[in-house]
Image (cartoon, rainbow, N blue to C red; front, side):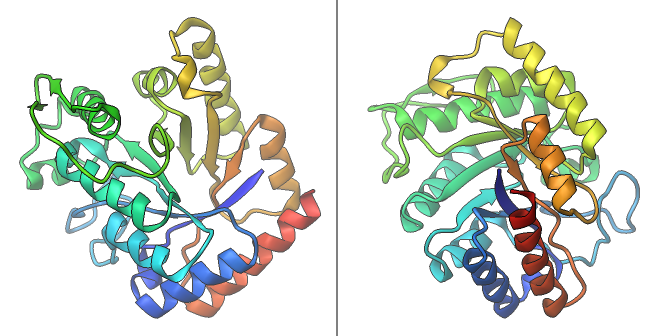
Length: 282
């Protein structure tokens, strides 16, 4: 099972020296990847279901991962997740392709639909059509990344007679992981994603979602070029060797523990502890 670390752009990792120290420690410890969170804005004051205090710093995922790419050599760079309906898909396709090129093919593109209405309101994007926008925007990004002469016509985005270079290094494109756990999101994952990303799921919740995905694989028309559905999960709280084994037994391919701590030293200690737990779980 591959090991990632969530939160490389959040809280104390908004400090560049801490980001470098943590990313390089994770790479030296054999971690496969580091992952970003995303909220362009947060409600102030904090109200449910907002996940974080409004003064908690969150660096832009593409900017943060570009910085990490320049300080590492093998670490994969995951967006966990980008809220796709809040982004212009043509601009985002360029940003992500640029990151994949500059990192020499290390991007993992995790995306989600979003759930904070105040965030959508601040951006002037209708909350109600976020699911439909997600599907269209993903199709448009794939067109820009893979079609010799990119063309797309939809309800929310359309283009033709253009080129967007460079294309991503990874072919046909970087791995695409879908977040969220609603029935429409799970179906979208099986039909359009290389993988699925479940956030803050304990063993029981992860088992439930994975079982739902496996059932959908039996009934949905999944294109063969997407390959086997890769399962990534961020568990809540601390994780030990026994928990790692139990997640692996559920069919989890990548475990991405939470990396938020109050100090750089505590976060570096967490990286060491997770590396040792993985060794014991083998």
